Length: 158
Image 1 (spheres, rainbow, N blue to C red):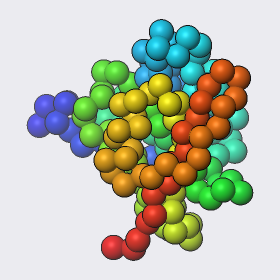
Image 2 (cartoon, one colour):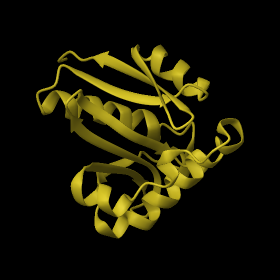
Image 3 (cartoon, rainbow, N blue to C red):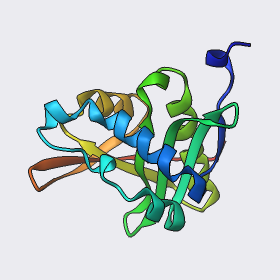
Image 4 (cartoon, rainbow, N blue to C red):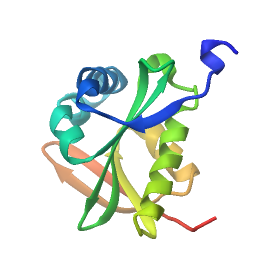
């Protein structure tokens, strides 16, 4: 099996992953800077703090290549996919899908009937993807020149 066809291994991030998770987020979101006219928040996130205090997962191959990262949190609104980032070298590889499926399993395992996320309204391909896989918009919020679109997906046990 070639490296590109090897399955992704999903695991909780550790303090040793801070640099790799940060690099993954920076590279994944860099493409949006010209469209947004500003730096996307996931690029400036403190991933050491996130790994220490949130549910952070990575998708890797061969035990060393972090191709994608996922930050999950529980808020007053419910179970949140705070950040999902797939390194450009690994987009289309199934890493993002694997992490989204893991997020849904974790939400159910932790007793939540739905999961939510938000994205910038100018990230139209993300909005289309999330809507295609069952997320429904429930709120928009403008903050610091950005408009966030909040989407929720109801979950059912298999």
